[in-house]
Length: 404
Image (cartoon, rainbow, N blue to C red; front, side):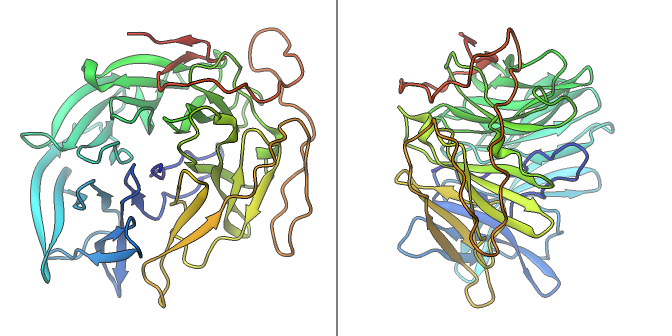
């Protein structure tokens, strides 16, 4: 199971989608969100790996601020990030019979030029948690939970960093988007080498190349870049360790919509092109769910279930998409959507008529232009299955690997 992205990247020229409605552990056992009762906000933990999902409220001594960050840990506790008087406080909450226990972890005091401090997506294993403190010229990586002596400063990264995607199952290799010199490029931070930074993705020298999502099992990565259409971001995909170029499917271009991947089907180690990818689509009609596979040239649109905590969800290895939902009648529920059947045909340009009331996707019109090097041959078929491993890329077309 894959964790949902906490803060998806926004398209240029728009505010983009807001953060996901909740955070889910990398293994999919727990979720956490801020719930509301009247005018009061409080953390809530969801247990997802039992016969039925259930929620445990974790109210503290006073209501939380609406912007308080919460994140589930692998043992069922909930990490809370609060800000007060310029300091950032971290605590672990846990149920204690009728009440809520709280273990203070300490505080982080950031320099005056720090523009934001936010939690990174849940780390694999669920024992540690991390945060990025972004300044005017550099970004500090903090371990805020799981250490021996409270928050620990791990590394200072030149440039302004955002995003955050885990590339392995051990919580060692972190990918972030770093802005330097007016351009944003995805880089790798090695947590076992004192935060050593290596290039991850550079499609063109003057392009902005961001990483949105990754699956450590298959090596499939989803990126956003303006390389094929300068000034306009497009979604693309590649495979860690592959020699094929990053590709930008035409079917992922939805006019007047922001499309954000939030979950990849795990367990497809030999067939990354067959992984089902869940997409959040935000448009004038609201937000809904779509499913896409790299091997297919179509996007299948699905109505969002009632009460969906928008932007949150996970796949099971056998292809079931699970979306957490909360309604007055069912305050803790999970909608289970089977993935559309895998047609197994990566070559044909397929379209279908949308169901009544379903938003329509633009038909595939032409292959995206090459992003670097000489003119590209016609778009190749899906890559032949080959074992992948979660090692960082250095540059598109994903051929040169960073080796330590």
